[in-house]
Length: 237
Image (tube, rainbow, N blue to C red; front, side, top):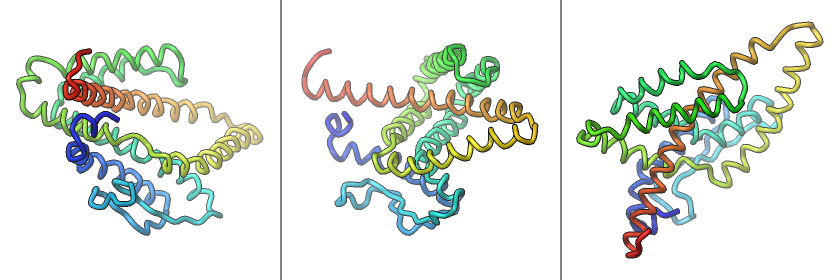
């Protein structure tokens, strides 16, 4: 919201040249995984005359349950690709912080359901990450500032657009029906699916926890742009 106000259109487009390709790549990868046909793409903001920095246009077979479920994952693809990119950047540029964050997660994530304890552990892991990132050693390291800049660019464009959300709704409905049947059918055959569901939930806990990394850098991105916006306006806060 504040990037274009703080740095102008050129400053905003500078972040787009890094953030938009990651965003659109998330859509494209999910299209391939769920067998959607990609008909047109724009990974870089070379043409913004239509109001979009980038896009991935795709077609699918509406009779295919698998491809309809894919609409959900295609819609949220930018979040997955953005989180993945941030984690890889951490692993490469600030490995100490990455391993500390990962170790903290492994020690704290034991629940297979979303509850207060799980949220507290996630916040603790995020606090540990924040504390380990902004150390004197990192602040004096040029590679840390490069990491921070790229992460801010990615976070500035990780949010889903209205078309992304609209496109994922159909997938949510179909996926809900499939999951409902997944829970009902094993019961009819007296098969205990709780263990499998527990493992799936545990992986979901990791995904939610790693999402906090994206949220952290989104907050940093907002704080930086808001600060420069206020400075340009000549106001104190």
